Length: 425
Image (tube, rainbow, N blue to C red; front, side):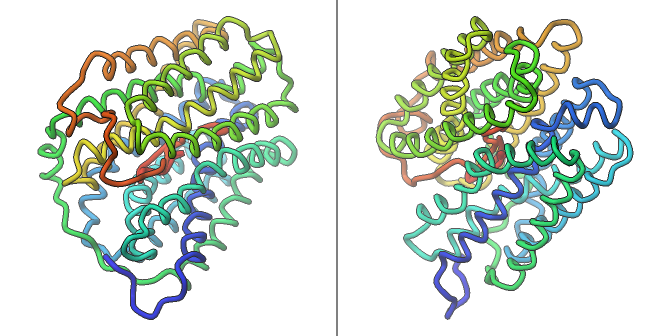
């Protein structure tokens, strides 16, 4: 794909894409930072409010690949603007929702748009940038994910705490609408890529080594979001952090996450296996410390920082593994990765909700650590052929950065370039 001839310099358009990624990444994880406020206003338990993340993520997990395939013939600009419009409209409806059920329905609608958005945004950015600049384009666009964690979610949490959670949703949707209008005017027309059929997905899933990458992704993200979805509850209950200080802790998490994205982006090109295993080890140490010493403020803050650094680096490692494992079918393989990532997010929110019905928040880090170790065992115990293994130490065919994803942030995620989204989601 290539952008229309005679277009202006690509950087402003890439920054506009990055702004939309930032807004969507922020919207994706707003319920995490505002969980207590939403619970009080709608008169539901925090565990039920956390299921909003489950609804969203499971929707992405179930629909990302088939919807990407079914819309593969759409011109990129039309598809991109349509998904963004659905996302912003549903977010505005979230802020106006009178009941928990209506809020869950609007989040489901956001999830439908999310999977397609992250499946196409990296390719759209590469087409805008032109031949030989896809790596730079990806880096610019998915910087929006990290900024969502560093700025978007903490700021949304602050606004929601001060003026009500509905204000945070409506303000973010309004910003998204402004960016969408600018995108309609400035983004170029780009033709669709090669057609992808839903029936192609099972064949892609059988690519040697891809199943291991997808399973590892799902388990590790499942563990991460078992704790991360309810991090505000953990900080309040187990660590004794006041509600007014939660935003500062989430900002620390996000700043460390930005550093993790940059560092992993440098290492994963030359030492992908070492980068992946080192990141998993750092997350394991962080979760262990969070579980063992939540009442030690210096150690708590150090653990939050290293956890944020690790969780944001992981999508970079996983996405690189996908591209190395399935270089001939990157879009289809990435849609499966996005599905696994978001299924892990939703499963983590559900697992955390179930645990909170019978145990205090202080148990969440240990549950997260157990799932993380289960996922880590897969790359540790299996070493397929170098050209198919997701974490061999040879350079990958292309460079990538995290979508998602979430990706993980301040709170979280999920997606594809990823992704991200992430958030990414």
